[in-house]
Image (tube, rainbow, N blue to C red; front, top):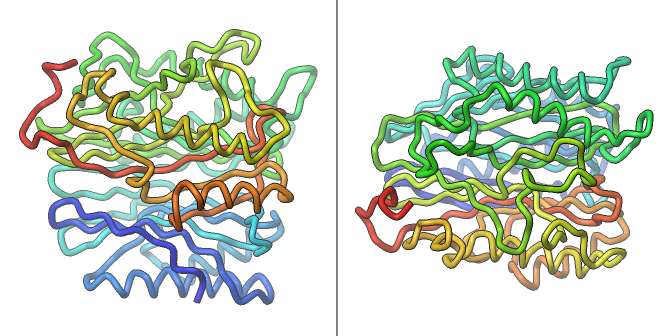
Length: 405
């Protein structure tokens, strides 16, 4: 069995499991893939109730392995195929595959597998929607056109589930050759330009769930990260509810300039995403942390030092999710620590930096479920990027934050 790194989180009667699996046996790609899938199934059997996987990201060493992986995963899941992203980012441990997956107990939750690009989960008056815009290859299109197509495909998938785009709370953007310049313009900057143009038509200032910032656009949390090919993979998570005790909070970091306020030297149109999105449902707070790097204000710090960039990145996350930051933004009874992280995903630009990056993460986070993958980060001088999810509880049950905001 692969390393069984997983975290179990309970929301009332509902059990959710975050799993990060890297195979250990070696062998050819099929052997590693079956080991990883068998490990996932073993973790789910340990939970004591029926479990179903809702979304998974499969990190692969080579694009040539994608067709084989697709066949293996379809054979494993059958009609209950979760939303699945196949991303060409080689696992740092030297394996051909690693899997990040989320599952939910179906004793008290209902999962609907609508199609290959849309899965929904319902429990306790909450409806979570997982959608994908598919995998787009360059095929002569510009990075701008490709990115715009990706967002439009996401919207189409959401529409099939009756979900407007303004319900999106988290996006993932896997862009091939992210820092490559075409006609003097970096591909990531063109992605940001397309995102800004697409978001211009989305009423993020009129979200159905209370944000306390009426009249202001509340952008989703996001990760924009590189892959080893020229494709683009887009995915998102949305939330719908009629509950009156559910709130959203866009988290920004006092150590960093908000991405949407970056000066034009970093992008013609600034990246439109939040540093994190907090979802408060009753007494439970879930914090979806965007891809975070060694940036203070708007500048890269600790250039050419992967270990120090990792330290700064974790400090940025620690400050972002802290009780002090929540209080600064209006939620005085909420907040989290690094110890509340359920999992992390660490993107390392150079495989040779893997051991030193992992050493910093394990010293500060312990043996937290994690996947380390080789990927280009959105700036040439950034060596590490980390995203994650934290779970915590409010200190004042029954208190609604609306009045504080």
